Image (tube, rainbow, N blue to C red; front, side, top):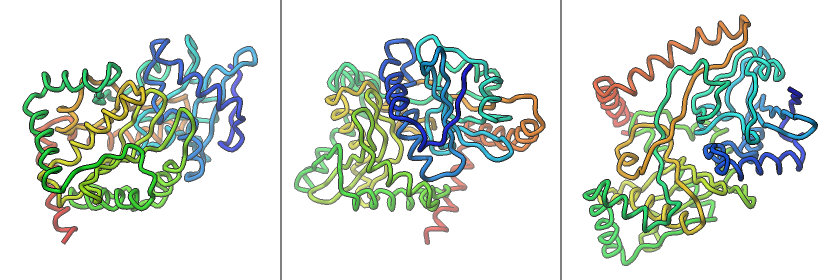
Length: 363
């Protein structure tokens, strides 16, 4: 393989266009997950402005680009998926039929190990050391919103009736509702981040927006717009007051759900659920094929989904002492976390404990 490694700012316009082209054609070649906006060049470039060690490997065959592999690395040669911890899709974006040798790619990138936690399907050279595979619920809207809603009525009739009734009641009580699919007011984005931070604290989770780089990343992506990619802020208003909002990323065919939150004062109306239905309706009108709700066990995801795709976590390693040491440190932590998350008899008590801690923190 002819492998060249670049800093994000060194990537040429031609390479960005080729990368985007691979994503645009992915669904035609049986790799639709490669169209996810977390795998877009815009996301990699935004991460590069917020984090150190971001690199992009370009693999060429016969002088023409064949694949793009964004990653982050340390001086010791530890590699991580770009945006590890906040990215919901990871892997190599490539032309149809391209395959690669994992060890050779790592060697060409100066990596002893590459760690991922949301590897998309179809990345066979990276799957040899998968430590776990997890569902990521999806809302299919490629046949239009009406078809999706009809399927939802069949799959979850009580949920659908209840959510639509709550939307009507919210409209009556608030003198009307209004949905904005692409809100451009940065003050509303700030409101969403404040809601989300409060939610993290209430539920005992770590506040992602306490990390300056994540706040900066979201703000940067909010202002990033190209023909196939955009940071999308969607807002449900009751009268003139925002009651639920979501910030995610859009590619040509996928809306990746990322940061949803709502005003707790309106909780009885389930504004977050109403918002997701309005998002699906507007996204379908824009030609989006599906909403990716992201990995994680949530009751609302089970109600809204039409199917699930799979993402994996694990490592790719070369024979190298750095790889051995890194995996020895990380494997026990991951194994413990996944044992808790995937087993209800462990997850439910842990979740209750975190919420109690959150209530104490919020006082």
